[in-house]
Each structure stands twice: as structure tokens, then as C-alpha cells.
Length: 317
Image (cartoon, rainbow, N blue to C red; front, side, top):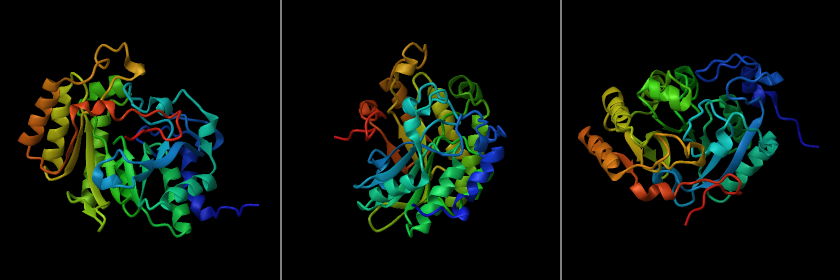
């Protein structure tokens, strides 16, 4: 019989009895199945755990990062490329894992030489994320922890993670509340994400510190996905980073948007970016003085299409 998990490891889950871990503050009792916006309980609902090589080079390196893809989300972006697992009205019992299995699967990836563990879309599962970190530490593991978040996080939540997270990898999706409402059901996103990013910047500053192997161990990298027809929003996001944080922050400017089947009939989101749109955003990127980070080729939208019905959702060639 497996040994019982020490209560001090599981302690963060008690926060889910009156859940305020994300900005929606539903006050749902997720421990008894009374679910809030994210429709997620107090278990470990994880779609995939595997070595992922599609992140920024300083994050993944040659061996990749052990990414943990949580199901559901505290945002419901119409255009989400992970729509197979992020929709809150879809439930797959196969994604309900026990903690020992989660830890065993992470360790099997770490044993291949992978040095970092990434939590993907964890904003509604912060207590579960903390439990996983504690459980790995109890087994003597000390990977670099990367929080790959949509940016819709409470400032105080980010503050509570200061001693745990090595690298913050947040999105900055919108500086337009009306867009955030229409596309992601989060009209307060600009204010909330802005405050969260300021806290991340307070903790990490502009530098990304890497080990001898070139893998990031501490820092902040902000991602922005350019959406078709919304150049003004992209420029506003870049201006926020440059003016409210610093143009020395590492920015990952992403051109990989592609219209998923979920938006096939959407009047704005059903097409890809144009060269003219991308060039206009790039021009603003350089005009604002950014000099650290990454930009994608426009053709990259063909390279980042996950399929979570496969064992490994992304195929790399």
C-alpha cells in the first residue's frame, strides 16, 4: 500500500474550500464539488506531462522543459490554441490524476536530463501547483520552476510565489478591456494583468539569469500574441511594457496565431495575420527600444498546433 501523503504537502489545497485564488474570486467550495467559473475541483486535472521543446530557447534548451498542462482555465479565450483542454464546459475523466502519478511522471521526464518544470495555465490551480512543488521537493528534486500563465493573476498570488517560481513566463494579451470582455470574458484583464506583471518585474527585474548550460534559472519573459486586425491592441501592450516596466524586459513577440475550428466563423478571428499587420507591430517593437527577446517568423503559425489527443500534444520536426 502506498504511504500516505504528509498533510503539510497537501495543506495548500485547503484554500480551495473558499476559492479566491484567481481574480474572479468565486468563493466556490471546490473541495466539495461546488465549482466556480473554472469548473475545476481540488484534484489534479492535467491533460499532459511531457518534455516540450516549443518554448523560447532559454526556457527549453536542447532537451526541452517538463510542461504540465492543466485542464480548464480562468479565462475562456475564443481563439485558444489549447481549446481541446481549456474549455470549462468539457470534462474528461482521463485527465483526473492522483498526486503520486503526477510526481512519478514528472520525475520520469527529469530523469532524462530535463532541468525545468513548467506549469501551463495554472492560474486557477495555484494550490495544486504549490502541492506539486512541495511533493517534488520532498523527493529531493530541485528543478527550475516556470510559471507559464495567461497573466490573469492576482498581484498577491504572484507575491506568494516569490520564493518558489524561478522564471515567470506570462502573457500580456490585452490593453483593451472591451476586447478582453468579448474574446476572453475578462473585462478587467488590463488592470489585473498589469498589476501582476508589475509584481513579477519587482521580483525579477529585467535580467534573465541562466546556468552554465544556457537554461534560464531566474527571470521574467513576457509573451504577446498578435491577433489579426488588432494591431492597436498589440502596440498598446508593447507600450505598457516599455513605459510601465522597462524596454529592457525580455519580450517574446508571437506571430503564431492561427484560427482554430472554434473561430472558423468568427468575423474577426477566422483569418491569420497579414505581413502588413506583423510589420507594423514589429516596427513599434523596435521603436519602443526593445532589444531583448524573440520574434517569430510569420510562417510559425503552421508549427505550433497542438493535438491533445496524442500522447505528446506537439510534434517537432
